[in-house]
Image (cartoon, rainbow, N blue to C red; front, side, top):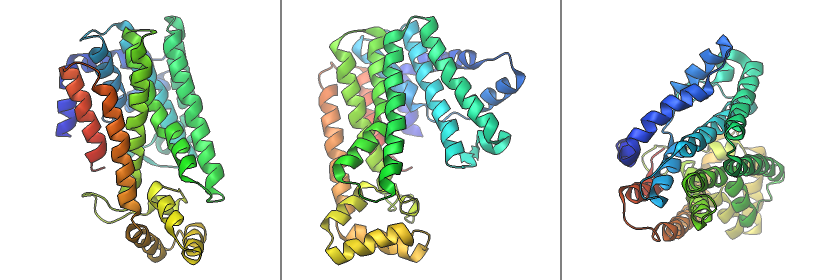
Length: 325
């Protein structure tokens, strides 16, 4: 976590103020809702998304932020939190960030309604302040995230994901939200400037690298210990596996698809698939692609003069690539 504190240093004041404003934006007249939103606020994660908003805003405007920046960061966090609450219901997950999930504590019906409430609060925060440009950025991100999830479900049934389709899925599912954070950070302080699109592209590229890094964790990368094979058990087609399938002989390909489709609960078989992917160079290929996305993202940052905010964004890029969980 040390690196996260270092990244946060130049925006420590803004993040402190953001947390206060965010709690206020979440408040409701319904006691049960306040109890649940208080629970959510107290179990916040690393807050990477609002950090992206503030760092980008301060980098492109040479240190300035305004009320729109705080509202934009809050809207992103409200809508992101809403999607997480809904995801836990969809996945029937009882844990979130090491704590019980909302659906585990208050059941599915309340969790779905809380997610809806957070989503509406985010939309109204933009509408009430005429932040329609920011609302458009966020709405596009939510649409793409939903499409990405559904595309993945559709393709997982047939296991016919090509590398191009895989990139489409992760761009929509993961990268689009980080792209929205960065684009929104620029739009809040410099609306209608070229920075808005440049920062959207930067965020999208970082998001792509972020998801590929997640794919690698399934194969026991870095210090997280033994390979988990969770993605294989859930029939998720990740980049290392897609590469292995593309390189495989007809016989091996048949065995791989059969293993993922029909034997994904057999731990021994899952470990054999993991070993096959490693031996075929799938992990090296995925790492190479991850670094290519990172290098392209850095080209967008290089256009900006040196500053503490740019230095923190560079640290953030390194963190995405080198994180251990």
